[in-house]
Image 1 (cartoon, helix red, strand yellow):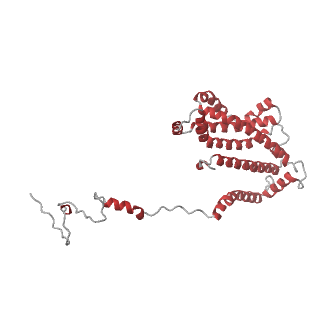
Image 2 (spheres, rainbow, N blue to C red; image 1 turned 60 degrees about the horizontal axis):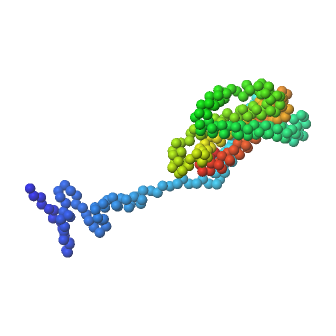
Image 3 (cartoon, rainbow, N blue to C red; image 1 turned 120 degrees about the vertical axis):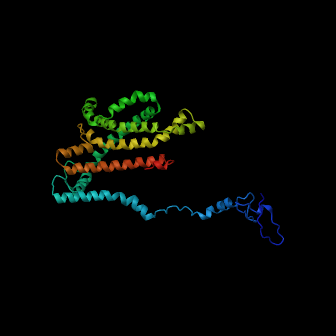
Length: 326
């Protein structure tokens, strides 16, 4: 059975080729000067025009300077202002004499710092109370960091040490620090040493637990990549484990720092004559709630400033890892 070829029109001086005739059931291939060899015209054209046909990806516009300023400085102040307004309205509406208004606490802070308002035993004593509490809190916090970070690194690195120490830590960790108050007075006597011990104990556990978690969370592929680059032994620990665990270490430091200020009031209940916790306890005994709240405000501002310093240190040491910036 023979098949007839398709008669194609010809131009003068052009001889038709056999390849120009398509067999039945096939599509005729159009050739021209723009068609490359091999017949991949469709693929070549689509690849060449893909970049022109698809719309370019648009990056989100950068926020304006005014918006950045509002988000960074104004937005964090809105909630404290709202709480102060609610506090003042609640005191005015209830007419209570037990809780002072924000204005009365402000006057107490002024007298606490400089005197000249009430001229009582609390006047112009903020400096000495603040310095004594600062020395106890940050002395105990530094001891907790010096003990907790190396111990957490060892527990996270060695399974043998973890099995030896971790059960005891997990048994002691749930015990409230206030339960150690009588024992601290027996061990260290009545005075600042007992307060330092309580603050150290409260800050120690968050630091060591978070450091251990950070070391255990280091991904195996990091060790493999470092080993391929010739990193072994102590250099592996210094260049791989420690940087990878740094975000968890800073989380533990921030938690321990907050708990340290929380426990200074409890620690200075042990017969300490000077300190913010001692001033708060004296205000409680004398029913001076303005003194109590003033001491709370000073502790809050001091802890906030120190926490921001820890955040700055965290962001500087972890500048290679923007996702861990606070």
